Image (cartoon, rainbow, N blue to C red; front, side, top):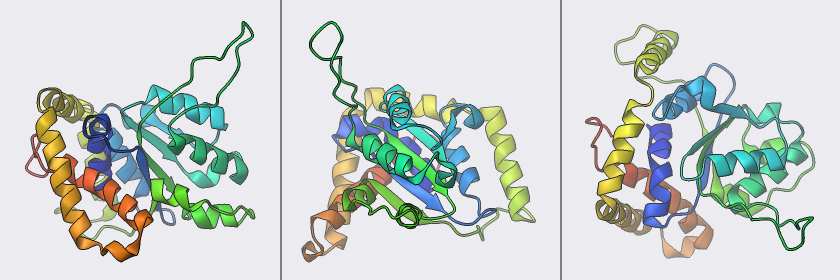
Length: 242
């Protein structure tokens, strides 16, 4: 439900004026984090063709962020990144929302890249632990933009005998239907902008009411991420759940 909410939130971001953000799902293998990531990606197309990895340069990640502007970006297995320092730079660049300022050989500057994306990342460790293992101090602002969410094995299997059977059923479903829900959702948003804004404002007010003001600005910035995820699920224009 969380990852599907993130996927639905992606095209809402520019409509409601919310910042780009991400969730980092972490757990040891077989907990289902990649299945949850692929389920979200299936809203917009074939998951395996959309799933990227952290194994790359900051520039490469920035290029993909621009290509996924106002959309969902899936980055699998942070532990398989080229190096922790590259992951750190890539994460900072990704959630900064704009590319490196560069001069042009012809004079002046190159056109700067901008993006606003929702990101789903996975790994066996949370981002802070992963980076600290390499002696890298994590900027608190990164944790506000990329939320670390621990994953546990599902207990509600919807009638299936095992977690594997449940995952296999999900995979079979998205093989047959990938992309359909995303098209329906974008069509809905294209004609219901004001409703999307009102849903976001409603969710935002609810989250603000739950968190004491004394908790500080950073905590309230985190609640904004959950507010846009919640707002994406309020219309329920696709199924009874979303």
